[in-house]
Length: 297
Image 1: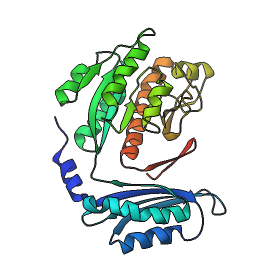
Image 2 (image 1 turned 30 degrees about the vertical axis):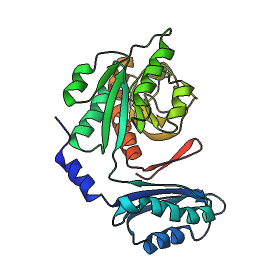
Image 3 (image 1 turned 120 degrees about the vertical axis):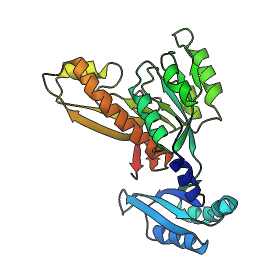
């Protein structure tokens, strides 16, 4: 099964659509300057979202989608011209084409629920990205992945072979994908690997962070007698389970639920939270500021 033609049609419809992300110190005139710039260049704004941390000296964030005739030919010139506006307002910014689908590598271990959710969204056309490959330290998921035409790479990992395994992983993904998704990949990613994908590695952690960091969070939650469990999708940094949070959700549990019950309930939360986070990332809806995110969902 392949993605529906609706995804192809959607990309054709957005051939001249771009997305602009901006963060800068808040001050009067930012929205006016950006809007005036786009108007003067013949662009039509179709969506605009903004947020300020504090109108008096805080940071301002904006996400704009706009249409511009012959975007592909004009994009570099547009970026060069906008740099003058950006310099005036001390902006950190980007302009990307909505029609360019981001390429993803999905890392997975033995549990299939998060991977299956992403594959289902991709097949239905709801995940506007290309899954370039699936990489696993086990061979269990090959039968799920290869019939869909997605390359599957089995790279075993042990304490003795971890460095060599990660080198092989980097050879596969470096320059080939825009982001890496850890769909319950039960290995710690090294700082060297993270350097290649800053704020572009998305992990699903099976707890409501910052609670229950590290291994066996459901057992930790059970031992603590929690009444709510959750899941957290976040960007990966060198701090274990400490990167900028993209999305979270929770569900109530009770004293009647054992560890296996918590795992079963948690799997539903994990798959939903990860799918949302990946979707928002590929649609350029996330701006990272320090160890936080602004998500225009």
